[in-house]
Image (tube, rainbow, N blue to C red):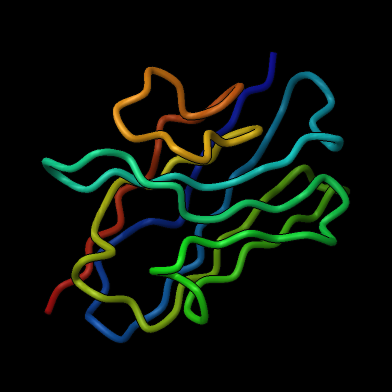
Length: 124
């Protein structure tokens, strides 16, 4: 079992930045891919980004490429999502996940494990 706790969400103006954190505990998570999934009000969940267990490989959804950066520090069991040039359409609850579902859509699961989410609101 892996427990994930997200933090760092909040209210920001369009064009601003936020950094989300995901602290993992429980079963050793260092060999898992980690990622972020988001869900905007009234919309299906979207895959946002993923990082390999070594940190050498990353994957991004097209709508965040060039704006978001995912990283991880295995020593402190934390994954980060640095978000820049935020847009109102980035407003959503952001979930951290182990082995994130690449097509979360209306699926029951976001990944092998996931957290409670953190709210990001971008005002225009």
